[in-house]
Image (cartoon, rainbow, N blue to C red; front, top):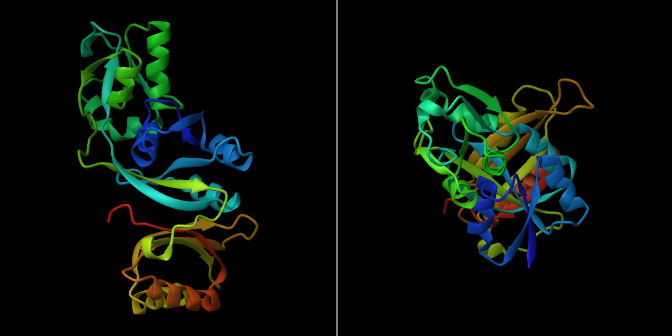
Length: 274
């Protein structure tokens, strides 16, 4: 069985993605932070990992780009998960009984509009959605609720007080699958790539690169800049591109190796939206 690292515990969105991506024949390594998740790969206590990288509401999880780059991790796949937030507590309680709601900061952000109707409820940030549900269950906390996926209520015997409390109903998070070794996905299965590069700080340098991608029939689906800590005011660019043929991508990559500085292929894999 493969050992898959997830951020958080069983019942979290990372756990859901691991189950959907790999199936049942895996064991889960619960990590309370993305740093611990990365280290579990580097120390070989996990074979692969699932990591959230961006959300349709909150945007990019920028520190995770840095972790992938710094630790030379490889992206072998991706998964898009629709996000459903549910308010849950010990059985027998109503929304009027709840004094405090604890969850991950992103979950609280994504449910902000719902809680405007309940100004007396205190919102408290915690490390993980499902971990709060587990604590409520184990410590029998009355008047405290968690925001978590429905599976957490099933695992920890909680009752869902309010369903689907997220502000935007078509909210999705993109997760990447990581490993330390370069994956062998096979050219016939590759139609997406994640790249990292640097450019000289001069007019038109980024525009020129974007034109090359367009000329080579690549579709730019993501671009994210990140400061290069060792060099003030210089940035690295992280991009995702999709393409119909690997040859088009191969041609663009060859040109980028000449035009850009320190080009790094973070991953070549199958588009999770295809």
